[in-house]
Length: 304
Image (cartoon, rainbow, N blue to C red; front, side):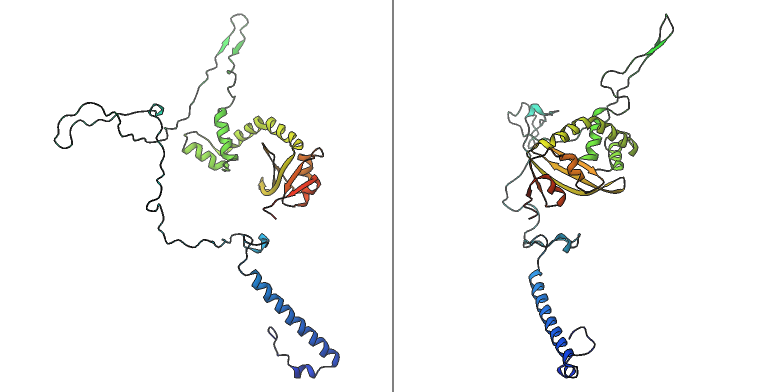
């Protein structure tokens, strides 16, 4: 037998008491059966991955690269001979910011002077980014003294002008970089400073994020309040970080909007808080137990 320091033979078994012989024969038969089943399971699992079978994702290393099912092509990289040409169509001339008409001055063969215009010149358009410079507006608020009582009065800022140095479009763009494009505070500040010429630091991005959050809070709360009235919601949660600690990002997708919520727990309290007892629709989920309290459920076909 493999894994033992000595071989169990019939002579060795015969020297044992009858009760021990029966136990040894039963154990040996059990070992043979288990080894046969193990080999059968190994043949079944061989070549299977969580991508092509019902094996759980935990059976595969998180950084393992799945084997490609496609055969390696013998063709060279890039466009193949005879393939359909893909190019950007020209926009109308009147939509161009600048049009430069180039005319030859002399014949390329004999040098004779040329004049006139080509009714159908060759059009060549070049797309380029404009020079990006911040637009800075200075508001000079004069303080004037009253000739009667001597009290000074300072002119107020116009309506819509923020009290800080960041305008609304700059704040919205900064929040877009951090929220939708998932850039860090430092990378966002570096992007604004290096590419846009907008002086910025990580602390300023946090300040602008707070201001944008306060401005969008009423709209967010309105959508969150209408979530229990939806007839169908897709729900899921995933791990994230909140202040260097473990947290969970909850996602509830309705027909026309999506509600995100970061909570410190994966417990069903987030479902009770956002869907409330007023929800009577259908929830599509991955069979996690915290959604079972929602009522009618639809298992996600991808998870099945």
